[in-house]
Image (cartoon, rainbow, N blue to C red; front, side, top):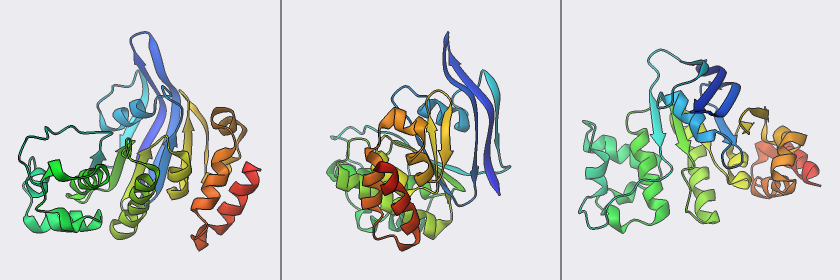
Length: 246
């Protein structure tokens, strides 16, 4: 089932066109990653999907009744503000304590319910944002560089949790990241964006595409293979990506 359809989408800010003729879909239950250099229009694409940016051309179509969860790039909370994780989770929605606990468990931080937001590490904070996005059981989860500022092990752990979220909830996931070695390994499909769609397909196919290599070089394929060595069902992708890197 198709949840999101983007057809011939262009987005312009003043005289600057940031996206041109973009076509893409998100299907139920899949993990799709958008990669691209800075200024390639990744966030503008996400903003167009959620209705925060108006297309200058083309269409964005959502499945009727589609529920979207959103994890922002960053969120600043005054460290002097006394607010617990539970209270933060319930700020804008009428949700029960049980719903909060369940969402935190899916996000892998069930022990943080009573902690103060100001006491959380960067990784814990992002997991709480993830839990808050999950609280209403979305059909699709959007992540805009949600691990910005985390170290590499923290980012890898976060994206492994995203795979677990998909397994547990069945939500489709559309995410943006610059951390190619981590994000591509967690994806069913990758879309390489640079103002337009340069290439798309499985991680192995994209890692070996000339358009992708022109933007990012060949080193990410090897990192992809190393990250996936313990994912038996992805063994073929590992080998293909390693060969592409060589």
